[in-house]
Image 1 (cartoon, rainbow, N blue to C red):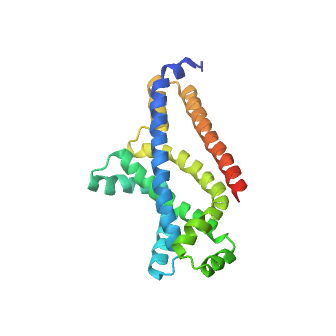
Image 2 (tube, rainbow, N blue to C red):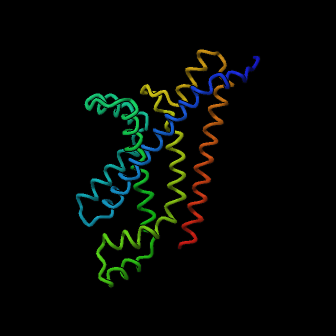
Image 3 (tube, rainbow, N blue to C red):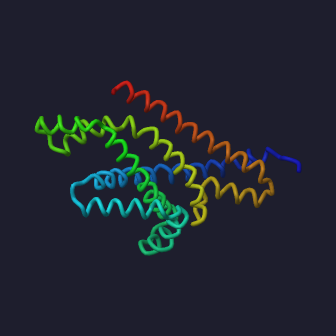
Length: 217
């Protein structure tokens, strides 16, 4: 088979459009997942039994269901009922799935803090909300960062599954171009290169964050 790498240049604008949509999916999914994950982690550690059981049930359920099934549910059930676009449904599905893992990552970071920090904070008359925000969570970030960023890479790559609900992100546009040009090797190689470059940027961000918080702590 004769390779024509010029097809990558001719399709560059479309690949760039697909990449931008992938980044949108990734950013908003991680934003939703992080906010919801933090809430679930705090609920899991709550003194209220109902909150703990709800968080535990959510984490158990969403870690047990494949992401593709969650995306189908988000699109065909929730999305159609609420009138959401495929992209909005994709963000909802990916975000809710990521939240289950992020909740456990955050919880692991929080419980890694020396219990003496809690006792010292309470002895100073600080409320739980105050010392969690000012003392416990800042110290737990150093533990959270490596696993959180590794999970971010997984979420970034899982955005490719969103093609199943009609979202033409990087993988989707690459498949369409490969079918129309009959040059799959060149286009798939280009897409793989884009994924590697963007994943590398996440890894670099992880290194920078680890150094920053290591210096502060």
